[in-house]
Length: 353
Image 1 (cartoon, rainbow, N blue to C red):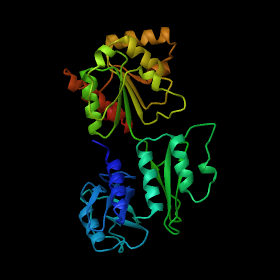
Image 2 (image 1 turned 180 degrees about the vertical axis):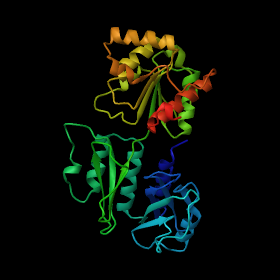
Image 3 (image 1 turned 60 degrees about the vertical axis):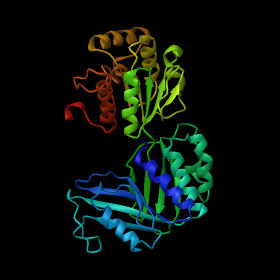
Image 4 (image 1 turned 135 degrees about the vertical axis):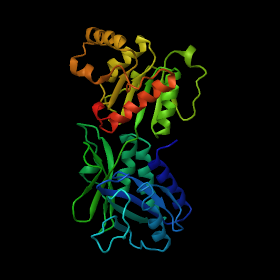
């Protein structure tokens, strides 16, 4: 299963290539309780067919009816749902009591708009900075400092900027993570394109396979690495990238791992320990290794002694890995691992669960 944003842009491109005008809709902001976060996407065609979600179902029926009725004639329109104080807003109250602000981009099937969608798709697919840079430079009307490669650091992600007054669009690289959506009060919106969440799994096992399957259900990209040919020769899980190498061969100082989790699930210290030694040198948002508390304590001592890891580095490693769910079976252990990855990705402390 692909993550929803990717499905939205793939459908947008498919409709555009069929000479169909599309309406690309982005959640700009939410006030109060809302089931969808800023940056969430939906695409619709003039008949009201759609892929994606803006509210989890609260406003879609009204919104798609407006599209069928030809409500959005401008290239860019901002619409608010749930704001009963705004007489120009749709008078629909969200069941959760929140307010939803949405940007609607009307995209005719032109080469420029299709190039715009192509860059969007490549970014969501995790195409590297170096590979994507020529496309970004070609799309932007004229090069500026935002288009040039910064040799002193690597970008964290790409963002698109839409000027709702002039209808100009552009892309630029970000070198730090800020708000998903930024608005300068002059009708200019900048929307970050988050890198796909990736999980690199060290070692092939039943736990690894279940972990990969759970992660795929969440729309994460999964790579399993294991150099042991006798164990991995018959591996075949649809949609999982398998590499018959040590995970460390994928770790590079030139790659931003900000959206990557690295986990070791073999119970083989030759693989698990080496993976942790190299993973700690990345900026992965989650690093974890399987084992009991006793095994984890012994591993921490080894990593301190052999790899000279300090207390701060050891604290980055989740060991034992996963949430304490009382897991016993491989599937239950994998669920605990993926749930913990999601917890950290969403910034939730353990004691908040």
